[in-house]
Image 1: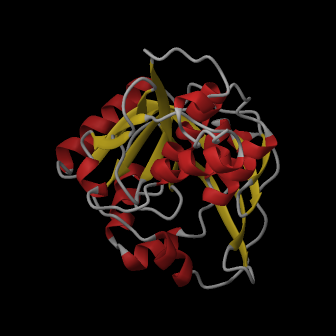
Image 2: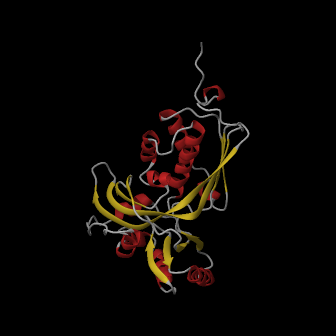
Image 3: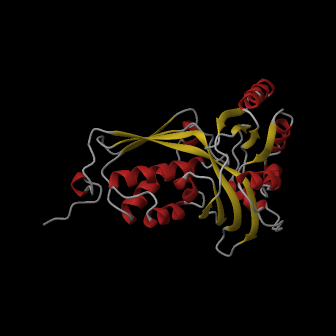
Length: 296
């Protein structure tokens, strides 16, 4: 008897309905603190970082009944035009290879976050695909095999898979939950500049400036730092302008760059202060991207 090829409907591991479109959020990731401790022999860096997530971000729409296909829509779709090997497709293929077979999927990625902006857009998209695949296959998303696939796809993908405030060590893939800052108003600002993560890490001076602080998420965010901010500003000096502009706003409690940039964020003590701050930034810098949201 001939074997059923992977991905065909006869190889489905569950009786998932064939007329359902799955909608999965891919929220933006923030590094509330990011301490780079050392360069590793494997080409990665030893990190200590505090991951947090916001309410808004990209979105995946997966049609289980449709023909296999992949489209990118949304305001930042052009940033992925011509990209080969999108992380969403890589996540689906890796899941089907290493975890469980999948049916043909029609996938639409609604790209609402800037590309190469330090807020984990691609990693969060990949994690959303793994969560969708897990639902279709009837496997818990926290299954160790799914986590292994996430870690192989990228250092931020495991954190994005869980979507919870957590301390990340190693490459960032070893996670420890931390009591969060859920509901904290936050403003994300990007000067519409894409920054290469590889270039920023390559420009890091190699100096270990100490461990991430102990304590809850608020203490770490308040007392931490981002060691990639200095090299990122050397590559894209406008990042310094963004940080200065956020620092001048009323009601701000923490201002920092996220990841390798160029997106920066401000935490606020009240939603009204965030709204006023966003209006001020949009008025003074109409070419910058702003997102008003909250930590989850």
